[in-house]
Length: 160
Image (cartoon, rainbow, N blue to C red; front, side, top):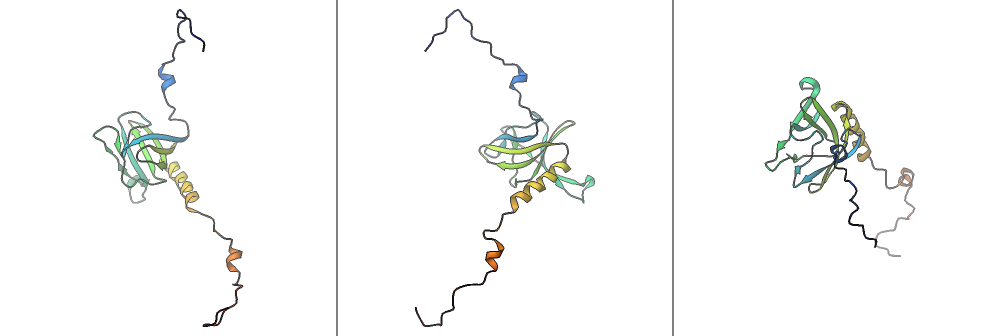
């Protein structure tokens, strides 16, 4: 192992805020930390609001929402009925960040796809995600299922 000379200074560490920031504006799968049903991260920074939103033609504007409660320990309390494909809205003043639930682990990560430019765009992509998850191909092909049975019927009481 090579020793460093004591008069040679260590290389500078880049601790600028630009290097330490995460790019929430980049589209993809973003993982937000969760701990015991509390969401610790928010794409728009501290404060603001968080809600699950869905299309509802009976409401003015065509959308309804369920606001998340602030946790007493910081962050947001995750709703009990959080499901794959839910549209999540983060708001802070005039800024909005829309994503859809991709996966969720209560003691690890809430993974969201996003950001989307609007609720409607997020809801359309959520439908595509759910359609892909809902469909499973048949175990056997339909031609195999239509074939008649090749076994011969045995008379009752007789054994081979």
